[in-house]
Image (cartoon, rainbow, N blue to C red):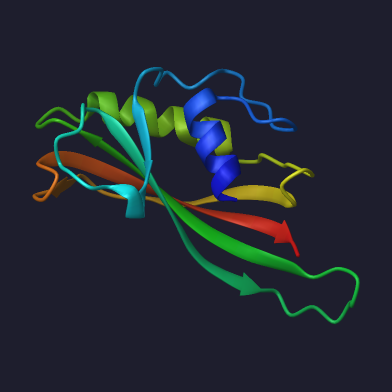
Length: 137
């Protein structure tokens, strides 16, 4: 899942995934949440984190789907959210409904988009987008 997200958010194409239209974020840094070591990062930038994985507990032995939650955060310098809005829309348009047999992803669903937020540690304004990937174990 991490590899798929990193590739999708940085190169805008992963084998088995359609990324048309391409994300309008060329040149924007993409980081895994735990890899952030400094607040001195060129803005805007994207951070993604992988959340809980929950089994669907279906009775079928040969078909065991699970829900993998993940979030994508879009940061920018204060105080105009319009560039963040454009990036959030592009990420949602690209990820929602995606499937990848190679990565065992049956479908990706959008769960929520946050309100306007600010991150005092990174000195940015931001929004997050929360997704759920239904995966085959």
